[in-house]
Image 1: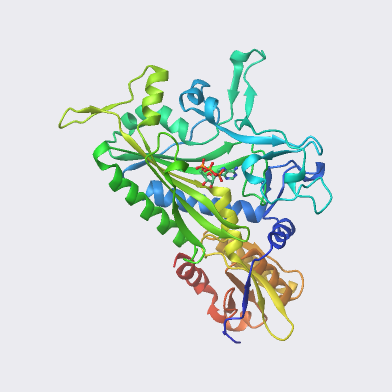
Image 2: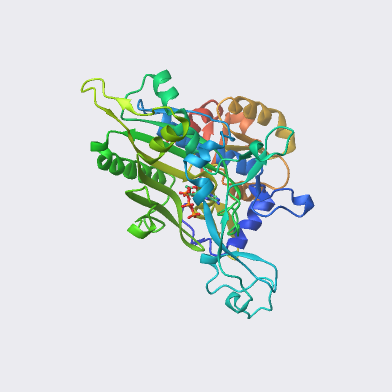
Length: 447
Ligand code: ATP
């Protein structure tokens, strides 16, 4: 069996990925049977596993591995005063324009050079009958309780970090943490985006993994640098190479009024360089505002010097869905594997791949020992069992799912006690003793 690396064609058209994702059940429109709902997506069996693995890795690196970070899981709906204090009620808006001809709404900053989707092909959106830009608040509202009075209006959180500031004092005291330390959480956020687009890239419901790291004012630069390095290392661990990953510092006119510095981590998608994570020096804006609006002092006292001060916040905020999308784009590969034969393979890093291993008996007659192996492997790995169709086609299905290894039981297994282990990337095959399969897999998956 040849182990030469085949020619690889990376993803060029998002449509190819969108159709693979629907066909193989990674991600597809939410409420598809009703025609979908714009800006909302469902993750199927493979997508849910991929997302879960990414979140677990983030939690491991940012929370569990660090003695100075605590994890929380807050409610999605916070007291409405939270969003007044944070500035979201007043300022969290995008400029939008309406087209009087086609009755569509667009983000004012995104319409340059675009074609109007409602108009004849060649008409640019700038030829539409557009209103002047007006501000549109992106927070999604809901009502709490039976009454529909204004007092019961609440917001679905627009970012996961605000509840972290609400919980700052409680968590610091409960966990007996001292500055510098951080609080992290992963969870849903909601934004009523004017133009959801680029598959899941800009959605109305999405997940964020955020860390708010609280530091003494004299140490903010040091920690801002530290978290940039940490987060870049994380994205490299996801397999993104330097041609597809970069950081972009914000220009001073891009910064939020309270921020001193911000850096975006960007990935090169087929639709261009785009932000997947933001790293921000937010100063003491959040804790000061929540102190003011709640009437509770969120400042801290240095146990040695007795200095009372408001900690500064260094934030890292990564979109889980955007990173899953980057993983999907990065993994996608069309490869020539022999004359006129191609395969579509998803090169997910082992450990992040939705499945660890597929158990494939060469014939249905071998189902019994194959199921026994499957059952023993399920205790440690995410296993897929498939006995239908010819073995070549079954390998291709696992390549599309990105499964790093396949184990094949054949008619020799009963005699020599060995199985064939196939590597997704090189397509090379190894004969391994049945009792050594788990160790063989562990060694490679943990590497
Ligand atoms: P953008 O400028 O693209 O709207 P942002 O600067 O508003 O993003 P932040 O508020 O910094 O984004 O949110 C942090 C992270 O949350 C982003 O880097 C991104 O990965 C993710 N995110 C933000 N908005 C969305 C969205 N509508 N859909 C999916 N992920 C999002």
